[in-house]
View (cartoon, rainbow, N blue to C red):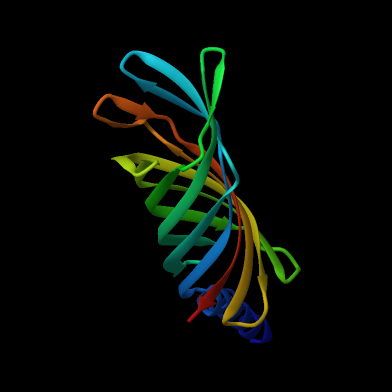
Length: 197
């Protein structure tokens, strides 16, 4: 009888633990966007673009199935052009910038450890909308995108989790309009917060 009661208590505890941790959440983060050098092509000519460090923020909402999380995310990234190299000549990129809006579906796996810290890895797929503003002349395009994430959450209480992450994001194909095409990849370091309902 005692063994049966212990077994029932154990099963209830195992089943109850994920249920207590699981649930919907929403969050946001901001940080530094480091755009990788881009290949530019126009009219049969090619060039290389370099960027200054930029700015990024994300807004997300999802559901924690514990240890798996699924979420929808909107992201914004912007960086100024530093310089453009054509052949052996280099020109200032002053007055020009690139903005990328992302609409992603992400999946995460949280590694449960005996600590308030919870490391995680993740990946996402979605749509990227890129815009090049070249001294007021704008070109834009939409393409498929992907990203990979690694980071850790720090649980303040049952509702608030602080988050620090690295994200690599890229476009599956170049942004292209009116004969101008530009490649896109970025590394992003973000700090944020999640509210668990």
